[in-house]
Length: 326
Image (cartoon, rainbow, N blue to C red; front, top):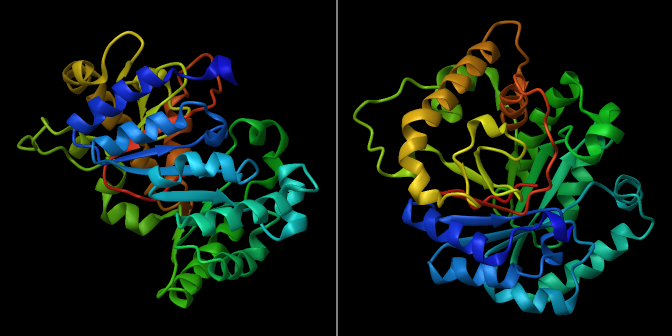
């Protein structure tokens, strides 16, 4: 893990540049962020710039000492939850995973940190959504984010059979509406899927609208809502694993703020062309009704790559969303 980490100084420089560029939130995910020795320094630096902070954890390493070091620096803590104890343990590969999560959750509640759950949806666990929502609400969660399994990292080699089929996604889409209504007063329910008709009507959701020549391109956060910093130093748009062909820069070679003008001239138009092309494919009558946009666009970005190396990320910055991603 240490060999894949960016040093704290580099991460903080990226955060400083992002703040200058109009971004308002720093989100840290993993790997397991609570194992990153520089997490406290990174979060403190973000807070010093008046940025909001989110951290995503699997809950396994939440302990009083680790939590105490960062609890005053985190606005939202997102905890991975895969289902009831037996389901969660099976997916996490440990008979003690759920007990560790519950023990850590008690520490989180005592600390007063606002928290939510990220539920990775699979072909085998979707039927437990009502249990997951009830558990989350009973523990005081402010957010339940339902995110379809993506074939990256360990999932790509070991869980391909667990990707949810189209009919399951359609059922979950309806269930998510019911859960959002049920818990409207206490907990936000978010499903990371886009409906085909919504894509057609709002191409701007996925950077596919016609570009406005009068748009103020001096505010990067208005042009690209989400930047991801990968451990190799690459800053890519939208999602982890995005092809380096579309990267803004590598911060080991050039500061993010300094690289932006050249990216706007050369890289950004190519990124928008990709989004427009993929959006067109997803709006056809024979396209799926529901789409995990981040997975689809990332996959398409890598089509022309002869080799895609999977890298475990540690930090990302975004502009106006306080919803942590798992």
